[in-house]
Every structure is written in structure tokens, then in C-alpha cells.
Length: 362
Image (cartoon, rainbow, N blue to C red; front, top):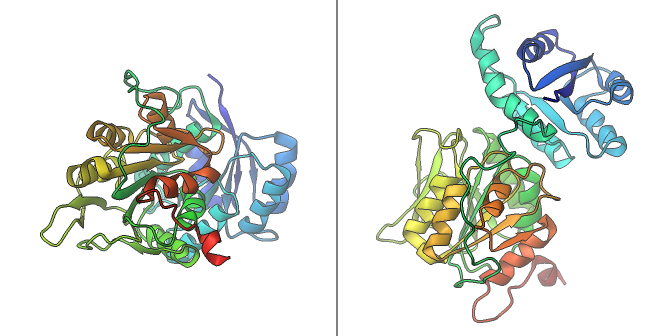
């Protein structure tokens, strides 16, 4: 089995040691170089041709953000994973790095040095990302765990949706930054989103999207009544579900067991949405590793709703959308740049085309 070749860029000795300890016995990856700042990293990338770079933010001489910019100019396809602090400042910088082209991020584990807890946290978070981003042979995204016969309905338009539900993971902030601002300002339905992210990151993501989108974007607090033209993002570490209430469909949060190793997870959101909205659910699965969303999309399709997924060429990792597409559940498989337009068309009522933000601005 081919091993992913990793270059670690971090000026912190403890962080480098933790990463080295994690990878030294791994079959999927090996460390081919270390660098203590961005200038050295750029030289080593040219020399070593790594499959993936881990990049710290705060470093002397050239910090992580400037290093990332230069990597993207010289090696646009090289996977870069940011090694992020778990503070609000660290989350803000990480989201900025993702907007500049970082492939993904890993939060620095919390715990006493020398204990096994930080190492296990790092393994659980980082190793699946290495396998997915480097396309290592035993990657869990390589093939479906349980093949299904395709449903013979691809390309159909289905009923006019009454709820837009979106699931996304790796590469998600950039994908959402493309799709959500592209939705029509007169969108006649609510939008609910699960993005795999920890607490604080989801709030900052919602704030960023709210500034760039024509719709109001919120991190869900629990108890909100779903309103057309509003976007609700599940908070980190909470599942978000749609429930039927006397006043109308409402959002509910819980900390039930992780689903597909995730909390929030896409499947509980989609399944609960179908229970309330039935065939009115339009499900969207964007870039991400793993298969969260697959079961949820089965529920959407069997209820008579529609599913749109991002294509492989524009996905950072074609795991989540790939599972849905390969199992015949997608009504449309589209490049990222075409998804907002497709959603506006599907969400239009009575044949009236929704106004796009660009058309409104003109």
C-alpha cells in the first residue's frame, strides 16, 4: 500500500513531536520532512514533493497564512491541512485559511503532555483526512460499504420543494461561500445546513456567510421556527433536527450519540426534515469525506423529494456526494459553480424564475 508523504511545518517542538509520534507506526502515512517556518517549508516542498503539508499559523519569518498563499500560487493542487488552535482567534484564522485555499484543518488536541488522550484525539481527527485528501488505497471513501441498486429517477425535477437541506464537510466553508450567496434573495423556503465543524467554528462561519449572502444566516440556538429566506446552521457538537410544532416546523438541538462519527450529522437532519416536510425536501450534499448524508438522501428520495450533489471534479473530497451519486440517489450531479443556479430553478414557484443576487444588484 502506498504511503502518503507528509511535510510538517510548525515551529513548536511539542506539536512536531506529537505528529511524529502519531505517524511513526502508521501504514497510511510517513513524515518526509520537518520545517520550522514558511520559508524553509517552501524550499522543502520543492525538494521533497510531499503529498500533504500540515501548516501551523503562528511561525517566525513567514507565518502560516503567507505560506499558504505562496503554496497556492506554486502548488495549487497540493493538499494543505492547517494545525489550528481551539480558541476563537484560532478559529477565525482557520476560516481565513480555508477561504484562501487550505484543504482542511485539525484543531490542536487538549490534554496533558505525555498522556495518551491528545494522541488519540489527533489520530481520530487527522488520519481520516490524510487518507481522504491523499487518496490512500485504504481510504474509507474508496467504495461504498454496502452497494445498492440505483433508483431509476435521475434527472427528474420532482415537486416544488418547501425546504432546502444541505450537508457538507471537508471543503465546506468555501463550497457554502459559493452556494449560499448565490441563492435568490426572495427564496420562498427555509434553508437548514449541517457543516461538520466544532463549536465556535460554526458560529463564525454563520457570521461570515451572513455578511456575504442576501439571506439572513444564523447559527441555530434551538427552538427557532423555520422561516422562508432564512438559513440555519447546526452548532458544533449538537445534532439539529426539524420537529413539527403547533406554530409550524421548528428546529431542535440535542447531544445524542454521534452519527457516522459526527455531531452534528447530516443524516439526522435529513431524516427529521423528511418526517415533517415529506416530498417537499430538496436535499443537497456538497464536498466532504465519509458517507454522512447517504441514509438521509435515501429517506428524501423514497419520500418523493429531490437530491442534488456536487461533482467529483470540484469537490475537495468526493466522499459524501460520491456515495450518494454512486448509489443512484442524485437527481443532478453538478459542478459547484452551477449548484446555486440549479437550486434557484428548482425552488421557483409557478414557473417564475427567482431573482439571483446579481440580477437584483443590476
